[in-house]
Length: 286
Image (cartoon, rainbow, N blue to C red):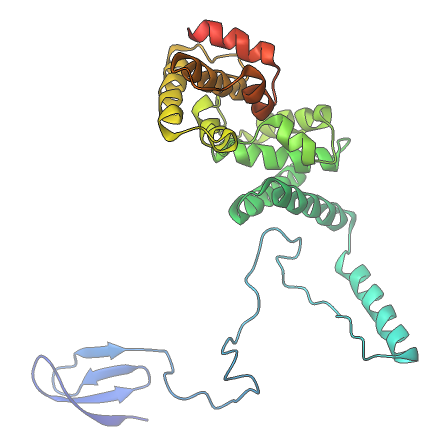
């Protein structure tokens, strides 16, 4: 139904007609406005309108095998006796129906392991979603057959740290993973070979901010160590070496030159390398 408005056409000052979602000039035919959003009042009222105006549920997430669209039967202390046992049976059957295949069961286990490791490593939620997507891609390519699910979960977390330039060493990931280092390396090699991960050599300077923070060294020392690490990376001195060990050696080299109290054992413990590694790299840097 068409209704006239009190506004005038900006081109010819003609009268405007509103038809459906369009506002059209009746003289020249200019479409003045097109709005399909109903800006009228919400005719349905809710009991918590004053405290919670939200009308939608949780957002979709890639860290769940069902994208977070499933429902759960909650727990209540008000249920007693037969009704409580019946709700418990319903909850158990509901959880079983959510996992309909072996693929879904592996995804649930792998995603749970990834969320646990991301929480232990204090990584952002965006890396958690990317790790779950990488795990799902490996599952689509049938890379999990004959290999450890825990290893692929750990490898996915380590791989997204590498691709996002987040400084987490292999030892740090293994320390919080259920899989051992050998399982992680096998899974990571499969991901890198079959999925073509965009990973390259790690720049030792990526570890300096975290190492300097944990050692509580001044900013000027970290800045000098970063310059030394960049020089070692560009000249190829860091090639074939543990990047964490190179970063630790850069901090120790600058501290020694400036007579700052920092021992080889301190930097080696933070970088999870041996003092011999720090000492050998220190001599090369000098």
